Image (tube, rainbow, N blue to C red; front, side, top):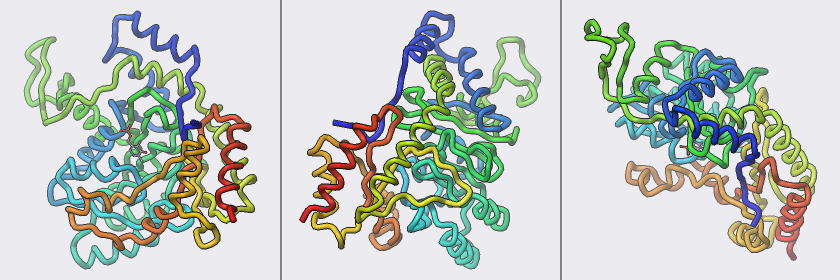
Amino acid sequence: MIPYGRQSLDQADIDAVVAVLQSDWLTQGPTIERFEQAMAERCEADFAVAVCNATAALHIACLAAGLGPGDRLWTTPNTFLASANCGRYCGADVDFVDIDPLTWNLDANALALKLEQSERDGTLPKVLVAVAFSGQSCDMRRIAELAERYGFTVIEDASHAVGASYAGRPVGCGEFAAMTVFSFHPVKIITSAEGGMVLTNRPELAERLQRLRSHGMTRDSQQMTEASHGPWYYQQVELGFNYRITDLQAALGLSQLSKLEGFIERRRELAARYDRLLADLPLTLPGPQSEAESAWHLYVVRLHLDAINLSHRQVFEGLRAAGVGVNLHYIPVHLQPYYREQGFAEGDFPQAERYYAQAISLPLFPLLSDEQQDHVVEHLRRLVLEE
Ligand SMILES: *Cc1c(COP(=O)(O)O)cnc(C)c1O
């Protein structure tokens, strides 16, 4: 089975991890800081805080933004659960903004309308999690203007978008978001096995993120409530977590980062090849967001079901039966039983629901060969053109 995504590891990655195993530090050593600095440099951000996964990164980013009980977090329904759950971890209410029918990202026009309404109702959000779906940023310029006007904090969930750019600058540079979150899960652009990171330009947020990552503890006398008792002294100044990444993982992430440009180049090449090979089929192909250059985590097609003789499910199962490991990103989050219990129902976000009824994610990863991709296209073609 050709998977929809997978990691690309080489001997240099393996050597980097083994070198840490043979060193003095398995965790909390110097490699984490090197990984953070390298990511901050690549993304043109001032600070980077590495954690054990992107879900933890989203959680502490929300806390650093001051999100708490009684507050509201808004995000897109077309995302992984974690983009919404981070709000619930903080005790906040979660709500959604429907997607743009062309880019499948959170729709900035729908956001503007919902903000107008919620200003009248006194229900403005404190945090917006803007997900760069499939590796392509949302209309961040517009979102940043709305954030300024209505006073909410923008967290860009760029789990799909390591190495992407927006308005000519790297995603993570902090021009349009207070904090940017990356995931290093093996199906994402670069991997540290499990791993995540928050990037920001604001020193007070970076300090808070570092503390929340490690039990709310500090060894910095500036952050303490009284003079240090001695060289052993630390204080817990708030409630934090153990969300630390290990040096083993950071070594893998750092080694992978050195190959990022090649990964992205191959992903772009494959995406352009899909664009070409699928152009004549009854499908909607990914639509570009002006100003965004995608990292191409996912290549999603939407089936024109009125022009296809099989159902969405039959095409999906037909591809799996042909050894093509397709997937579906995403089941609208508001339709999950947990969120239905919070009051959401079918019909709430019609664009995301319509998208879900038609979408299929095709295999896309740097080691996918042209021959494998041709196999994917050949079977998809056969299924959607079946008499
Ligand atoms: C993968 C993913 C996450 C969670 O990442 P982990 O590192 O697995 O915790 C969050 N948001 C989005 C959009 C993702 O795709």
